[in-house]
Every structure is written in structure tokens, then in C-alpha cells.
Image (tube, rainbow, N blue to C red; front, side, top):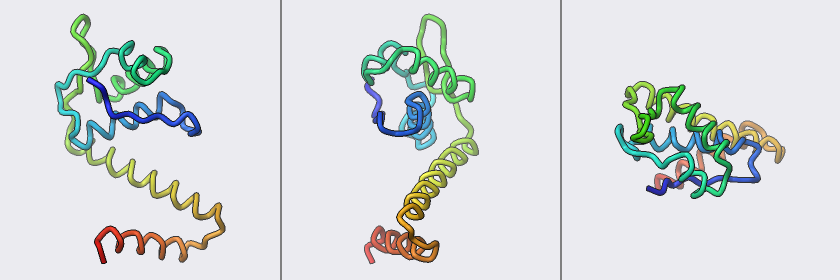
Length: 129
């Protein structure tokens, strides 16, 4: 199984964290159901062309947080996640992305009112208005 994970080597966010966040999003968004088999650490490392140590760290963190479970000799699987946890992950991810967009706009010297206008324009465009 090849996961739709896209890594940015240019990002300041560590690679293992990018993997964690993207897997959490896939799980919380319902794209990976509970019980779904995940690639081995070695397999995912090869697919993403990164070190095994990096992938192991991401998997260990996800297991510690309860998103995946490893069964010795059987593999790694998506764990059963409560709906409240899924909702928290989704909300947190969207909030963080909006914060990053605001930070970018501020670096370009936009005021908060201008940023709000841009945000409203983007919402209207999305609605097709």
C-alpha cells in the first residue's frame, strides 16, 4: 500500500513530524479506517526515500498517541480512534494552517483587516459567489 504522503525537504517542520501529521489527517479524515494495514517502517522509508530512523520515530510517536498499533509479526495497523479525537485533530490542523497563512500575510505587511478581507474573498470564491 502506498500512502499519499508528500514531504517537503524545504519545510522547517521535521520530516518525521510531516509524516505524523499527514498520517493523522488521513486517519482523522476517514481515509484510513481502523484496522487498515500500514506499510512497514522499512517499506515506507523506501517509498519516501528517507531514513528508517525517521520513519521509526514517526511510527513510534503515532503509536504512543494511540493512532496506530503494532502487532509483533503481523504488522502495523490503524487503531480505533474516538470521534472526539478525530474532530480535535481536524480542527487543530485547520487552525494551524490558517495561523501559518496569517503569519505569511503579516510578513508581507498586510494588516489584520486586509488579511480578513482576503480570507473572506477566498471563502466567497470557494462558495462560487
